[in-house]
Length: 71
Ligand SMILES: [Zn+2]
Image (cartoon, rainbow, N blue to C red; front, top):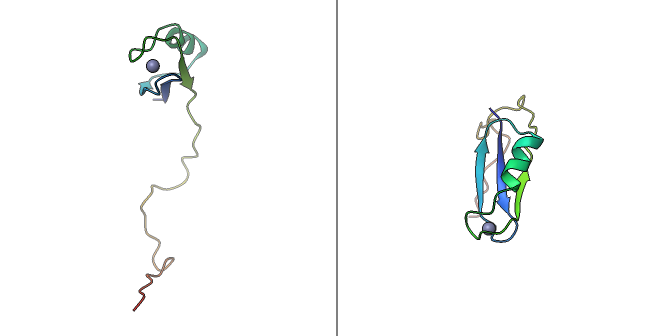
């Protein structure tokens, strides 16, 4: 599932949308007023294409980063 973000340019309210991103979806969202401020200033951010070959974050590769201790 793709996920993309709808952002209001006026009040900076933002919320995620889950589902396929398309011009139709974008126009449908942007045609609506912002639920926060009521202005037609919604902007859709296209999903970023991330390279999923990179491993999950937080995996420690041992010894790559030595702890510094200022004594
Ligand atoms: Zn708004």
